Image (tube, rainbow, N blue to C red; front, side, top):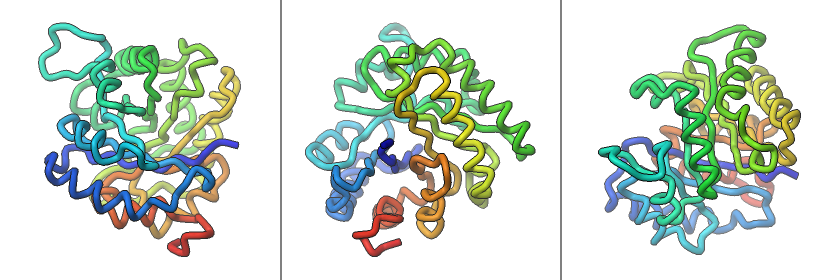
Amino acid sequence: MTRQLVGTSWKMNFTSTEAREYFRRLVPLVADITEATGRDLFVLPPFTSLWVAREELAGSRVAWGAQDVHENLAGAHTGDVSAPMLVDLGCRFVEVGHPERRRAYGDRDGRVAAKAATALSCGLEVIVSVGESRRLQERDARAVVLRHLGAVLGGVDAIVLDRVVVAYEPWWAIGAGATHAPFEHISAMQLAVRGWLLARGASSPRVIYGGSVESGATAALLRQPGVDGVFVGRAGLDPAEFARIAHAGLAHAGLD
């Protein structure tokens, strides 16, 4: 059975000092989410706080990772961070292809594919973000997402696909004032992605949803067919709210 995955990206928020305070508040709140619950947690802080994550989250059930990575292992790439650097900081995950990276930095599918391949070669688990840039009919949205998947992951060996997490993040559901996509749309897209991964040899595909996730809707969202977890944005900046989302739908928690 695929383990559910609940994570958050802080984007460009929190200093290292603030990150330490966040982690010290979060860890006790999610200590009851054990291996037996079938749910894993992760946080993607800014690069500057990865060392804090290593110190504060070591030994906890919360994994950590980075929000981006360079496609080269080393070299004259001012301001960039390599996969070996992330591994050295204990990262388990790295995200590539987020809509904000695509819009602001021109990360097209070819570069996203190169980043994913490099990160996988270094042993990281890669969260590949895919999603349509505007509201589309389900058929058209599916075509966009599957095209991106083919371009980014089409060359990845089947044996490696189980270290890939696909995050379906429709651009139009991300950002201040946005709301999550309709459940039926999310489920249809997640199932399409799952089918694509299975057809290419993945044995335990993980497909999570990101886009205006909040605690009130998470339990219902996690019950939708094809949804293996959630990827939290703004709501994850509050450790108590992220803990509520992490507990959503768990019978023992009484918080959903």
